[in-house]
Image (cartoon, rainbow, N blue to C red):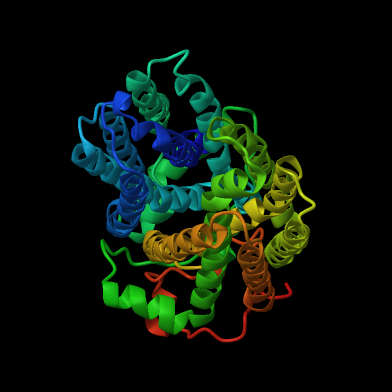
Length: 470
């Protein structure tokens, strides 16, 4: 219920990004009913990105104050409204407003969903579930590519209606999922640390009773690990900043490095991919979605097949392995691209291999920033690092699109690929040296709650990593 009900968020985001990538050229035609310019198509993507950043910051704070459950229902509803209305846009300005609203909903989803998953899933399975759920973004991208092949074919669907129907796919899926989410409980961790003790006990009792009804005997609770907390409705922003950057500075560096490096690589390759196919391999526009399908499959397979290793082999080993292998394959692709020996098919194959590993690594970045900070500021931590990553990704998309040029010179883009490989290797090495061995660890063992009585008595500054090597 948790995986299906909450995992749909990334499918919706992947669907949104892929649809806009596919309908961009359609929207420039007068028959679409909009007839906007290429620059205005780029503006649509930028406004959606800005909406995500605003949504993450606003709803990240709210999810820590008001609860995970309220927010993952509210943000999905906001997305449904924004995306649905985008399908009935009558001009550029209405389209921009609706895309901003949809972006806000998805940005808020990132914070509420990652917080809820980490706090509801057992420690032994937290890594694989979180990574798999984040990886389903590419399931949405695959769905968007397949849908575009049908809905954007003017021989099958009129241009005026085809792109509009595309924007109804997400809301239709969302209406089904919002029903499932109504049955997902609030995080008892959030309830307890915010003073809702009776509700927390009732939530846990309900979960335990559900487990026993299936004939499973629960082991006794280890009361030696009990933590006494004094619930607080809200944590001041000054205290949030102090905990993140003064008490856990190395974790802040870890989270920022992992998020920036993976976002830089993804946006650099993903948003320049169509240009590379067009300019260097002479792939016509109508065939570009066909090359995104295997690319999306590779990205989806990585988290699903490698996710369990983050719980068994460990976070630091697998982050270094996935980031490192993605870096090596990207460097190899750069050499072969520069030599001019690749075709559109072999270039796509190399990207599939590269992002099979990079996708699992990128998903682990979201896992890392959501589990290494205290419960009470988890949503805000996710929002902060998500916004940093989006900024890095936006810069990468612009830079690498300019490196493509007119397709006559391979040198600038080759150099860009080597820079991307170096970025990924840096992310893996930073995780190896200062990362946290959070696998199979309780969230409270990784970062003690801000509201714990022990912490109030003496706030411990971050020293040598207490979990490294354990």
